[in-house]
Structure formats: structure tokens, C-alpha cells
Image (tube, rainbow, N blue to C red):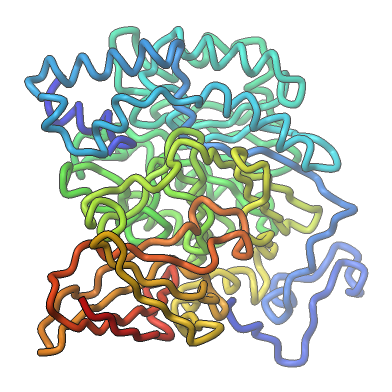
Length: 512
């Protein structure tokens, strides 16, 4: 195993304005045309609201389950590989040490996710959708374990299993191609059944399925080693061909595209940079020019292990992008001072918050999405609704303009700075997102001479591991560490939202 390949294997180690101008949402019954509005009429009106009474498809969406046959053995094997490469455990970063010495409960979480999601639907599940890293190594034993869970779970057994491969799935090549092993294992289980028998496998074992009249196109990445050659030309050509066919067949319905990698600099984690593994591929642009041509496309990605409890996990531009939550451990950005002075990417309780989503599509092509934290057993954030394709508001609800929202506000001016046992803390009331979500607080500290002691230190809050804003810690206490005695310090705390927009500031002084 090359050093680079090891790091790639550790990839996971490591509201827009409503544009109404006098026209309101309409349904087929509101229009003289019994087949529904024409394309020109749609373009001048808002999409119908989600129709609870006419759901045509419900599916569970999970990512990065990293199924292992024996987690303790698997983690020990990973640690042994690291040591055999000449690394010393005590010299690894705290994050890496935490990853390679933690035994995860991903099998337990995966098994719990499906019946839980099925219970949240009025009609159960029609399919299971997973954009990659189903297994930890791509071993046949891991695939067999996944097969056992599929067959033993009444909520999904015998129903379509739609997936693409991830970097961990193709990490081990000693037993042949992952997708070939998957096809062999799941043959005759009903997992590959689709409405249209003429659809099927394509380049690099990618696949086009139709379930409940809704199209799914899953594409497999060819190479995760470096940032070039990620998707082969035949995969890209096949994707374009299948998207054209699907959207021509039914331009008013969403087409779900699965890719393990997100589009660069879009959804959460797609701009992630890990200083310890700077060459790691976290996202790419290779299929973006294709997807840009199809506004019906809804790209479901994974890989980053970022929490879905961020409004940045969904983005609409020329098409819709959603980065799925993770069954395996969670990570976040670098740079937060309360995470190893900005040198860590693992948040508190990183292994206790498996996540997944329930997607429901109605007869009009409108999609409802509810995200869940299975560790908490609660829905995360608000219910999301994607308007059906072809309407004037189809791609306006979750656009870049959300970054223009005003910064967070503090509900009061109460701020307290204090020193205990040489450690300085500052406590503020929990800020309100003011239309967005509060993700972190900026701390600036100067002494009486104006010298900068802390320059824009970022402190992440508990948004990523809390289901709803009202459940978040209140007040918020930030640990500032040890400040040199003999000075008077001015401490300024500024609340910031998930887009990095600064809001209200509170100031306190403390003398040591």
C-alpha cells in the first residue's frame, strides 16, 4: 500500500425571495389543460405545494456506513498497517489517534436506521439509496454482512438498493471489483429490480434505475488517488446520455444522481482542506458541466462525513446538490480554537450521531426531505421541500443568495468574563441565527496597550450534534485558556452563521 493510497483510505479519517408577481402556486386541477400546465405556463408560476396524499416514492438515503465484519479486528488491522508503514502512534495527530483507536458502532447504527426511517413514513420505504462507502474495505465478507442486514430488515428486503461505490469500497483490490462482488451477492434478492427492465448497467458498472416512475442514475468514480482522471470519459458520456433520456422521458420529475464525490466548493465539506493530507480528493468538478445542462438533476453525494445539520448541506444552482449525512464518524472543518487550538477536525461526540434522510416524491415531482440524527432519535433542522422541476421557483429556494442573510443577533447584552484556577472563560447568551444558523463565535482579545492576544479565534458551537436550535447550549461558555497576569483584557465575542457572516458582538473586560 502506498503512502498516498493509505491516506485516501483514511479519507474519512482524516430562503431565497419568493419570486411571485401576482401568480400563485397551482396544481393540475387549477389549469384548463387536464394533462397539467405546459412548459411555458410552468415557467410563469410557482410549483405546487408538496402533496401529502399523493406520494409516489419514498426512499431512505444513507451514506458512508463503512460496514466492517468485526469492528475491533478491522480497527486493529488499520492500526497495524499504520505502524507497519513506520508511523508511531504517539506521533500521530490527536485526530488520527482517535480514529484508529475508536471502535465504531456503524453496524448497529446502520441496522437501526432503516426501521427508524420506515417508521417516519406513512407508507414505508420503496428503496434504499446510498452514495458510496458502503463497506470499509470492499471485502466480500463486508458485502455479505451488508447483504445479511438487507435481507433481515423487513422495511427494505426485496426492494431496490441503489448505490454507487466510494473510495473505501474500492480500496482493497485483492478480491476483484467491488461492484462485481455486489452484483453477485445481491443477485436474485430484488435489490436490482426496477420499473423499466431495459434500464441497467453502464460504464464502470454505473447504473440507471427507475423506481416508482422516478429515475436514479448512479455513477462510479474510476480513481481516487489524485485530483485528475476521477471519472473516465465513458462514464461521463454515459451519464450525459442517461440524463438526456430520463429528462426527455419526463421533464417534470426529479432525476436523482448518485456520486460519492460532491462538486467542489458547493455543499458542506466540498471545500474541505486537511493540512495533514493536502492531496486528498474531497470533491471534484468533472461531472458538473454535464449536470449543469439538466435542472431536473438532484445530486446526492457523501464522502466528507460532514453533518447534515447545516443549511449548506443543500444547494441549488443550475441543478440541486445535497451532501448526505454519515453513519460512520463525523468530522468538520479545521480552524476552531476549541478543537485542539484549531488543529483538529473531529467535533465532540463525533461517533454518536449517525445521520440519514427520508425522501418522498409526490405525483407532481415535488420532493420532501427530512433529515434525522439516529443517535438522538430526532429530526434535524426543518423539513426541506424541493419544488418540482420546470417552475419559476424550482431552483430558487436553496440558492447562493442565502449567504446574503444578515448575521446572527444576541438576545441580550449579558456577557461575563471570569478567571478560575488561572483559566479565563467568557459566557454569552446563545445567539439567534437571524434567518440562518449560528455555527461559531469569533473571539478577539487585546490588552490595555492595544496588543492583540487573540486574533479572530473561532469557537464552534454544538449545532452539528444538536437536532434543533432550541436544543443547543444556552448560555455559551468559551474557554480562553491562560492569559498572562498583570494586564487588563478586552474580550470581544462575535456570533457568525454557517456562511461565515458576522453578526452582533458583545464586549467584556477582565483584569488578571
